Image (cartoon, rainbow, N blue to C red; front, side, top):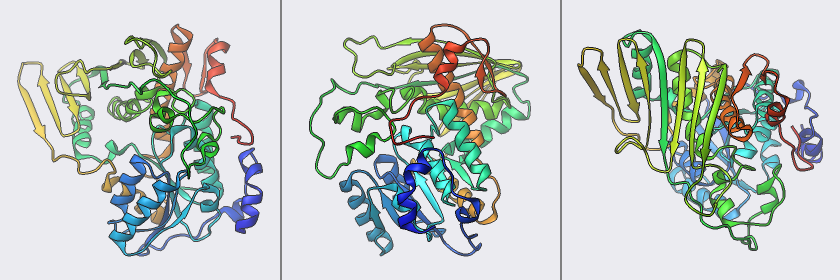
Length: 422
């Protein structure tokens, strides 16, 4: 599709129209060719991905995009220092998607932009690496999966635990039955989520604040929202619940072999004085899955000494505690077994990147396929809805709706600010 035509029709694409598959299909990447990529979102995680990928022989970073020009200028300069080639830079992601020479895009924006950019990238014939959480509503997540399948795109989710040895070994122990039958699993996070009292002011020069908001409701620029978007419901549906929660629930799903909870109930709040954001700091959620229960514990300080996050599997023959870098098995007879793993050098995992590039070339499903990423995001969204409704909710994981609760079902979608639509 011609770049000018793509940009002229972007409003209708965002409003639900689609590009015909014959024009959306990108050329197959030959196995020995480098994958030409663009990184959309050049903040903290975007920089981490860019600087890891700049050293990766499987790809060339040909474009960067961010609504704040200072960010893409900084990243472009550093990528050029590493590779000797300066990527092209853009403020509007639609210009990136209009380029026919780009094979794949990284979507590393605030959460509320993940679904729409992913769907539009699939429509434009690009493969996608999208950060978690993949979506802010159930409706968005299903639209992302449908777009990947309809347009035949490889979509990898940034749940990089799937590519880390400590978690692979954890899952081997759990799935081989060395703990007996798993009856309970727990994940936790301890983090200080305060953003500071919100201020309204003029946006800095070079920032397209309207584009940053995108499908979210209009509000004046706030440095707290811009730097700490996870504190606000309009951009992240649960703060750490949908941030770290997706990482950890993904491993729990992997371990128990289940990804469709039957019901959920949750309690929570922020109890340290005046509210600094509208997502809760402290959350306790309980899920029932076929054959076991799963709990999520979120506090502003960890309940587990010197371990800010992690998970436990409880079986009939023992338990296993795991977090990045180490796991400990305690057998029913009291014996313990601990194994340490080398520390991760970057939040952006090169093995996870390389699995994506392999799948771009072979058209296989990646280790963290979009369906799987959506299923790991789902319980965190359900817990957030249970918090809002204040009651136990029963979930039909196949129909992706709550049973006999239309008030709760109103939360599985959300309105987009015009002209955006999915």
